[in-house]
Length: 339
Image (cartoon, rainbow, N blue to C red):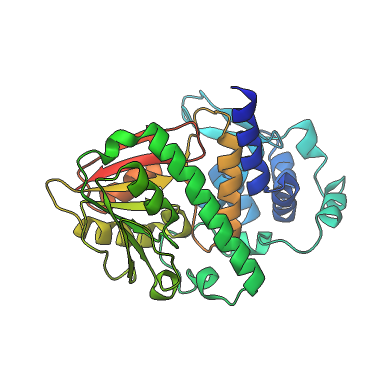
């Protein structure tokens, strides 16, 4: 990888910026080092979950992040009764993180302010597949106006980076498409870039009415207000960029069904632009994707970054007949799903 590409990877890591110490703090609060030590041998996710009182799904995400960073060790067993199963083991570093060693020092250094805690995890944050009454709270809460402006600017910057990658690597998926609706497109950055790159497309930027009311005029793009949980404008293709990772599996299926209703059964498709976690291998973006997963766990109630298997389960549940994964040299991948 050339220096410019490596710099891009590094920027993603810094931008996502999920400090390892913060997740280590959760592990110490949960008592994971002590649980592994008292078990005396590598432990399964199920047994570790029972030991520390944390749901398996969210605990798996925490351990996936920490084993990537070498805090704990992941082992694949070939034992007759557990072929291919994942077990977790101590490392010299993790042994130092018990509370009777350096654990309390790390807790003090990490400080009290952090959006993800052992209490949250034990209560089920990040593990629910069912919709939660407060699942949309992050999007409804009152945010400091200056921070909200900065957050919207960040979304626009991400849209530019992700859409550029899609245009450069996946231009074929837009051949023969007349209309594309970008669900949750904010001010229309992504759809505006697609229409400019592929001028045969008519773009629809679809978001909440108060969002699109302030969107700038864009050639070839219509701004439409609405709610993706109720209906999605009709189009040849529907695009979801960095939308589904905010929601539980159940609500993702609901959104995907609405998108499926908006396209033609014979010729339509849904284009998903999201991170795809690979638990079997790694590339230069793996660390950034796992950091993004921790950020989503911290910032939402039931959102998460998903593996290809988890994406397939959602698409199957939503009634799609087939789907194709396109992997790019980027944090995101593209998934084409057909009715």
